Amino acid sequence: MARTLGNALSIKNYQHIAEACGPMRAREMLFTARLLSAEEALQSGFLTAIIDEEQIFAHVFEIARQISMLAPLTIWAAKEADRRTHAVEEDIPFNDVLERVYSSEDFAAGVQAHREKRKPQWKGK
Image: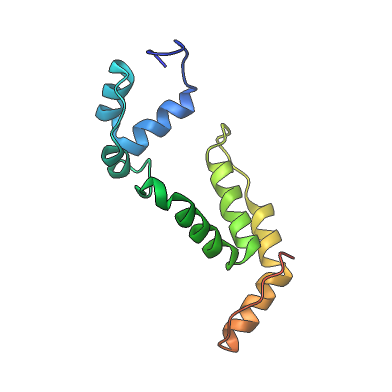
């Protein structure tokens, strides 16, 4: 930012950076426009893995496969929680998400499958 466009982040984004890597490293990065190495970004929680370029598609497809095997509404709820957690509002509503998940056919199917000690079949309903 200070090195390229001369723009600024929102206050929320400044907070996210300080929370992710600590206030001192955030100050260093922001005041000097220093970029993190891949290893530093991994250690700071900005990355979840460092993947060789030739393995990137295989890695992405494996993550997508893993996610596709999970309950769609639970994944939706996690995404929605993440989105709302980063909202500007102080009081973040979330009961609608919980109601949708816990009243879904998928949740009922998951409970039934757990009782029967088998894998559930998710439908996103």
